[in-house]
Length: 114
Image (tube, rainbow, N blue to C red; front, side):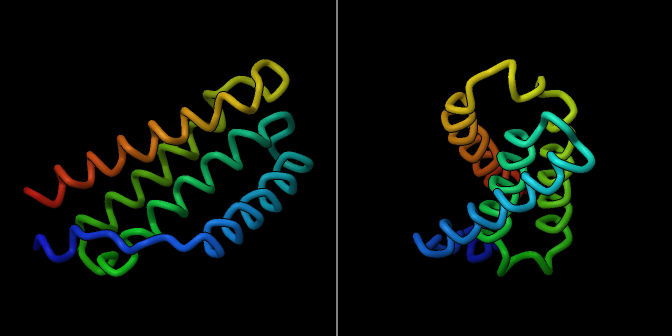
């Protein structure tokens, strides 16, 4: 099972396209359903997509699929937990995103070892 624990490399063009797609979705949801939460939506979609892309070759396994579903649910909940966009600078999400990604990679490693 250690073969499935290796992640796929993320290319710069893919990361840029993912950021643009996340931005479009975040703006659309911010303007319609979740007013004032565009930053959190962008953050949640981008980090979830980043982690899912890394382990997409192993999604067929139940544990990996369940893990990715939990990642998505967690980031969906963050939209409602994080205060509205005007209460914090958007730059705070960059270090939070790095910590978030590192934490989920660590948790994924623990799940794969089981």
